[in-house]
Length: 240
Image 1 (cartoon, rainbow, N blue to C red):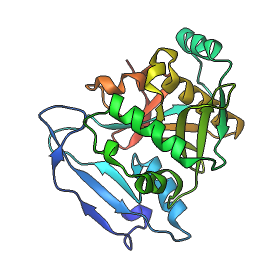
Image 2: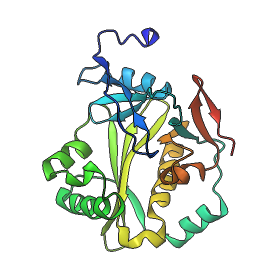
Image 3: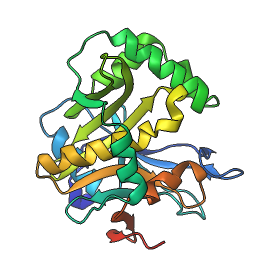
């Protein structure tokens, strides 16, 4: 921690709470508060490379007792190759575009978020977000980021992805989509589109957040080719 020169930052431990991924286990986090100062982006870049993850105005890293299942993950862009099913996903959704958000009607994205969270994450506190809280989450950030919309040929918003910007890549913070179109694989499609954007920007990595082998919710991350995980203080290719 000292090497990152964050001694002037607010650093603290959370109290143990129910784990979101493994039943019967408790989760605890080391938290570094971010503020809106010029060096914030530097702290963010370095902490992401050390396996941290951003949530709202802070970075966090799991420090759970007797458990190290949560491992930060990222796709190594240069060596990434689409699987057969991922190529089918792209080919079956050629009518959809992934475009950078230009504000527009924020309420449409909020309504889509509520539809998604109530259908896919009915036990999550996020489903209780108000419009103001959602707008703060999506549009106000202590670090540089981008919001992308997945739209059809009639400009209907079918999915949304929030991407943080690092000096060596992009980080997929959160995404949501129309749950009625689950068969179209829109979650996977948006990650594949984010890979393409990362490649066009000539960046090295797309960060996907924590991967937990024991969690079925996280299985989709291991389906991406050339996935690196942060383990034992270094990044290494995930071996299935």
